[in-house]
Length: 299
Image (cartoon, rainbow, N blue to C red; front, top):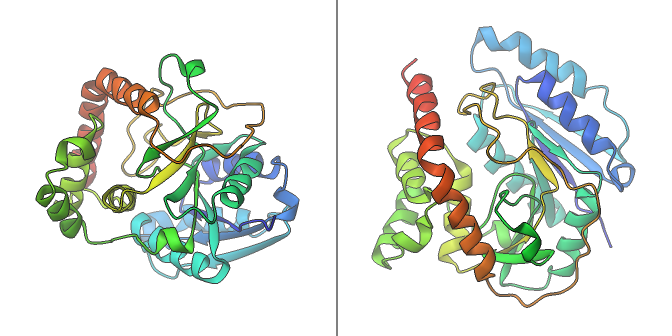
């Protein structure tokens, strides 16, 4: 099994970046993996010092087979940085594992991701491998791994054949969703339709909603674990678009996930559990995130 390169996207959050790296270094296979870090440039002078602090830290990272750092001279913004970076790396290596600077991983994360990539590499129906699943009720009733239509963005991996399907034009995606009358299914009580509409209007710059919509429209499936191997520590108002919440989980799986080939079809039980989770949390969380976005884009 050849290991996929790990791509990490950073900006100006030193505290989060250090936690992400410390956890990643504890992973089995970390010392055998190539780490590529994309450091975005400061958006303005006030951010320059914090960006430089992150760059000083990542310059001295060890514990991996190799460490490559790409320092952006200008501010790409998260969406452009990820789209550009993932495209560059996946075109070179054929596959990629992606994390951002606020993702803390289980020590079994890299094992799971690489095994998933290896197991489903030849399965055209499968577009990505994901390490996160929502803290739904009755998780123990789900199989260890399962498939859902679309993608996710908190610790994920794909192949060049998968990323080649990414459509950056949100208007095109929305038009096709409406033309095929798939709005209700696409939304899934998760707010995805509003998120895509806001991306089109410039109220957010989410690459993730476009990645999800691209996969959804091509009827591609992604592998998910019943118990998460990643924890997002960015929901503390430190990010430009993040609201403070712990509703998306507070615990990491501390045991390995055994990946065995399963039927490549959407798991309806997992889909319904996800929808039930969002029905429960969405109204209150939406209010929080809307307030955060309003404050961000009016400043």
